[in-house]
Length: 131
Image (cartoon, rainbow, N blue to C red):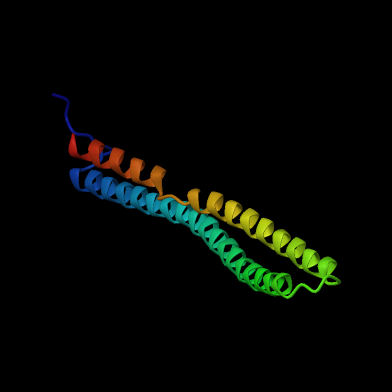
């Protein structure tokens, strides 16, 4: 056994350094989790905004379709061009609402948990429990 030198770290110093390093590691893992959640929340918010736009345009489409059907039932021969115009506008709103809903669905599907932070925390836990 080698004699202890004055420059060798003490057990207290080693414990202090280890606890400081573990504290830094945990702090960095929390920062990683926050950054991953921030990206997911932003994508979720955008998706919800697009769903709201699709819902608004869907309501407009129902109103336009109702007006077009009323003109169609009240058709007097000369109004043919008018109700076809209403139907074309209604079809345009329906297509636009479908496009917004599709884009919103894709954005919402991108929302996920902080997978890397969870995996890193699990690895840290396993590494500390094996020692």
